[in-house]
Structure formats: C-alpha cells, structure tokens
Length: 122
Image (cartoon, rainbow, N blue to C red):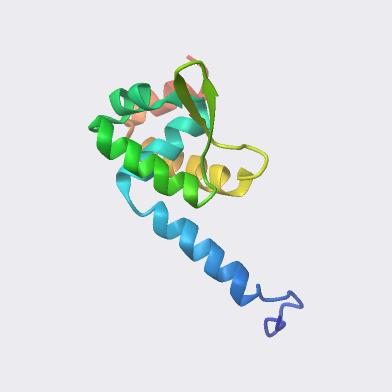
C-alpha cells in the first residue's frame, strides 16, 4: 500500500479496490439496488421481493442468485420458503452506502413542504 501524497493515509490495496468495484458493479443494476435496499429494511422471500420491487419472479430470483454469490445477500430456509436478508454486520458498509445514497436521492425527489414537515416532526 502506498501513502497518498500529503495525507499520511494509506491507499487501499488493489484487492480492496477490486472487491469494492465488484460490489458497486453489482449494485449498478436498478433492480439489484432495489433488492438490496428492500432487504436492508427487512428480510423477505422471493415472492415478497418480486411484489415489492415490481419484478418478475424469475428475474428477481436471478438477481438474488448473483447477489448471494457475491456475498451481499444471504438466505435461510423456513419450511418450504427461502428467506433472503442482508447480513447487516458483514455487509454494514454496503448497506450504509445504499441507505445513504438512495435515501438522499429520495429526499431530493420529495417536495419541499413534505420534507420540511418531516424535518420538524409534523
């Protein structure tokens, strides 16, 4: 790792940058970003996710498979259902970035009077 000029901070390794780029690459799909956003707010099965994100069941299932292979999403079996979730401890940084970015962009789309009421607890 090299030190960034004038900062005294270490630059991240090539492996760290590659891992971050891969995560951002997966999240570059609006559907996958919506799935991670939804799962960061609570676990769900594929049917519930498909309804929530407005996608076809096979497409949502494929997105979940990619997110799972990348380690961004996990699952567990509950009877006959597969329940998906984001590991908030292991993927805290990804969840934080998704919540921050999507939340800020959503706020920007909120009309000013509604934003002011929310800020003032009305």
